[in-house]
Image (cartoon, rainbow, N blue to C red; front, side, top):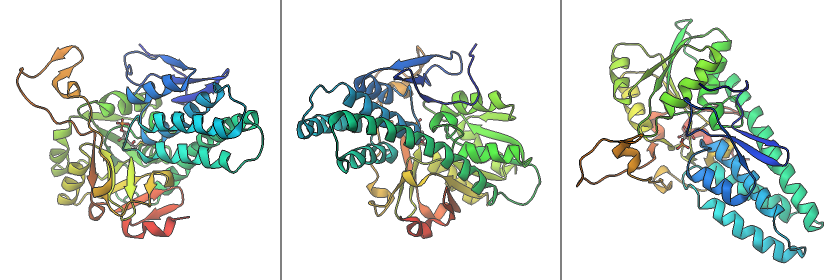
Length: 349
Ligand code: MRU
């Protein structure tokens, strides 16, 4: 069985390398993968050793530094050209979570505005990656505090439902949606969390449940198709989910199945909240139709472990994310406060 350190940090900078918790093996095996090159980081993001929007951004930032570290050129302009090639390779890993693009842009912008030698620039890249990571942790804690403000006043002990894993494993630590649930637990407002298993990759059953067990938070795992029944039975008081990219009008891309959950929440009058840092908001995109949706390999659907589920001769469609229209979202909880989706633009810096 797994052993781990508490709190949970999915990405760690230690001894001049990046340590990633291998999220593809949890909960059965706790393994830390050492990453020393940008190519290995790109592979780790693609294969979901590290996953979750903010964690992907942090990993990509360190990946860019690792790539820069290996560039031998000392001439600034040529160095920047090489750096851009590495940045582009990292951008190609996963298309939906905007934090990936945001983190790479921030890294590049910081150094493009810096005078100094190539060696200075490399150090600034490392420092910026560390800042992105430290800020995300702080941001998650603020979102946790802000989330307490929207909890239904009754009953005192709430049952909250979440989808996928928007926890410590998906961020620098603590989490977005699961961060709010953690804060509710600490504040004595949580009876239990219902975790959708989240087909096909099972981030809810594997990762959210694992995080809750680490902290002694009571958790009930349900398969995705049970959520409507649970709401009909009045078992759920509110839903909190994370986000991979939020368009300027509040339409929100998150793990496939989130949209369906929002529809049934509205049907049952269960408040539906999105929890996300400002780095997940893409003010450049007017609405959710413009969000690129990743499609992953069909094997995620047709097999579980080594067991094949479906007969030969069938076709597959495996979108990894869907878009929840803004009108189904009661509020978006950010580090800067709680806003209605229609008020999102007020947060633009
Ligand atoms: O495919 P994944 O596991 O990277 O998808 C993760 C999600 O959809 C999360 O809900 C989202 O990134 C928010 S994480 C704080």
